[in-house]
Length: 414
Ligand SMILES: Cc1cc2nc3c(=O)[nH]c(=O)nc-3n(C[C@H](O)[C@H](O)[C@H](O)COP(=O)(O)OP(=O)(O)OC[C@H]3O[C@@H](n4cnc5c(N)ncnc54)[C@H](O)[C@@H]3O)c2cc1C
Image (cartoon, rainbow, N blue to C red; front, side):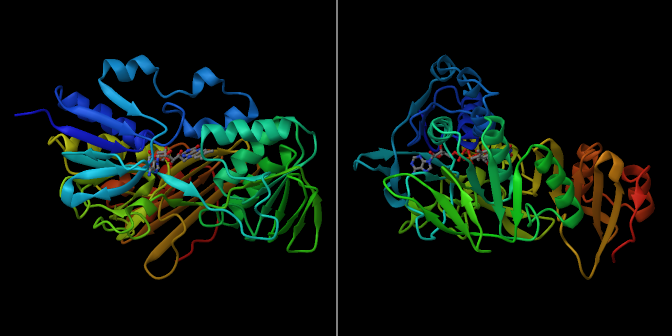
């Protein structure tokens, strides 16, 4: 029997960890990872610290290039996949080349959303997704000491604002919602993060959007906001969210919704075509919905597991749950499962220690922990995640004594 040919689209954490998982199980198979990026795989999560100057070029690489050679994983960089043809078991590259596969992993990650106000096409309005984007941002902010406007108060906007501020540039952050990282943080959590943001010297304008970028000849003079304010700016960084990068699947038989729909074995609806990472949309047993989860650990875990299934050696996957740990301008935040759920059937327990900047919100349903939002002190996070995933029966008394001891308890929401 000839060696199996594995094609992986995307050399992010999902694609790279899938390739390693395959090699661990199939010593003879041919493994090709295709990516349009110019740089060999790197820590996308460190792009903000690269911008701040605290992560060096050498620290950015996921593995040294010899690693891929030793593992016989072929990286085809600067190569975009334009189409997928499941009936012929090929992917079509942008230059028309057809590449055959026996098993295909789709791990194309996500692309940043952008703004559409007047002036949005100015070359100094940018998003940050790749290492090259981060280099460009450093170039733009170091050639002038004029201020930078960051659009978006979610995780990406906050960490990029922090990175730029650490380069010594004045930064104003615009967030159109009344609080930061609004889909995840409640009012108390947002205020604690805001304290950290202000301590870093970043101005935050809530409920305010970018209305116009005013400039000429490739330069920006100022930004007008929806509240009628004018902000001086040399550069505008847009961080308003991402969308799974699945346009190249249009016209193929691979089923997509927001992302690529997968089952518990990372299989799409098409035989021998798998998906993992930011672009995959898998079943979340807690919310009972198909979810796109866009974070590094999820991509690593899914890549490893998908690779195992591709090599015929997978073990059942419990499904995706929302799980994110971030340090936002010095403030630790962890979110697990249904941290924002309220209404019938849900019980919410909250505790705080304002002096220490600690806040915890735990959500139960049917006597089981289903969600947690932790700010400041995130201890117990591992145990909470296990309880959520294993749907371990618990009680309000047990949750209070395990996770809220020493905190001032707020009135319980039921
Ligand atoms: C600045 C920044 C900071 C972040 N910080 C954090 C953090 O602190 N914590 C955290 O959990 N997450 C963070 N993230 C998110 C995290 O990086 C992503 O969730 C993770 O990289 C997703 O991995 P992935 O393998 O699914 O996709 P990606 O890492 O996006 O990799 C997908 C790859 O596929 C390639 N590709 C796409 N389409 C094609 C095509 N048609 N042909 C060829 N190649 C293609 C892309 O070039 C890309 O290299 C951050 C993201 C950014 C941008």
